[in-house]
Image (cartoon, rainbow, N blue to C red; front, side, top):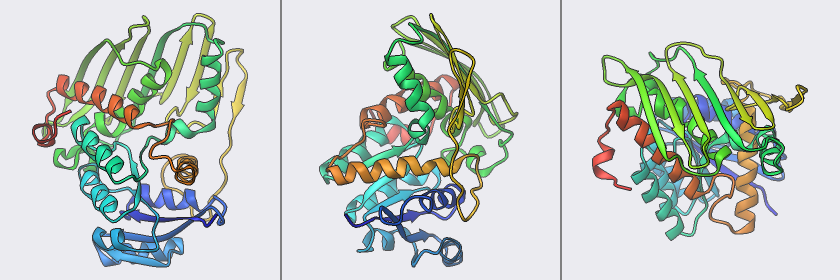
Length: 337
């Protein structure tokens, strides 16, 4: 099979890290052939840094590029829906950075359109593709933890002044940017939707959420407690407790180790990329890229690891948390679930 030919929409931090991650995969399987940005200088610099042959000004040109099979959409939250639609219109498969869209209704519209076009589309919840997640999944399904009773998750960094966080029209806020990692973990572990959601939090002067405390109660009786902050650094750890013991997952959104039931530590090292990533353990984005290749070669329109229904379930929880915080966006009135 010919390598999967990637285009990248956006030349920011996460797109940089994605290009670095793909560079660690076999060239016979993956090849980044094009990048697009709104400005010529950004696109050109990105292409030069990563050794990408083609660069485009504007995203429509990328959608029309005949040498691209799939596009990674790494733009601001508020732009992803529109850009992903452009790529689907151009006949391109899509891997879209999380959150897929700003709410459930918008996500549903995008995924339905992808299916109509018979194109693969996946939300890049990269955490689920790290090997540590696979190990935990097997432990849970084998009954090694017994019945899951409680999950505690913390994720926080002092990033409240970052533009993408503090500005609502960019799809900002700690819920969308950081909270999704915790919400998806809860649904992934329990494999069901919560019966009850309770949220408390703090807003900034621009009416954007910067800190949240969320409790999810599930039909199984399990409880998930989530703390998210864009103001301070938290433990950034998840603990999964069952009737037979606990597994601890440091850096749970991009884990390279875990503490098992018996207290032993398991390590899952990442390869080095030629160009250094900016964000922690972002080389792990390679795992979701490879999943895209496998699914496209199989003729699948979605992945069972982050299915379309998974993305909608996570978005539904995120929407509820936002609304309990009193955070509304224009898209909430336009796109209904």
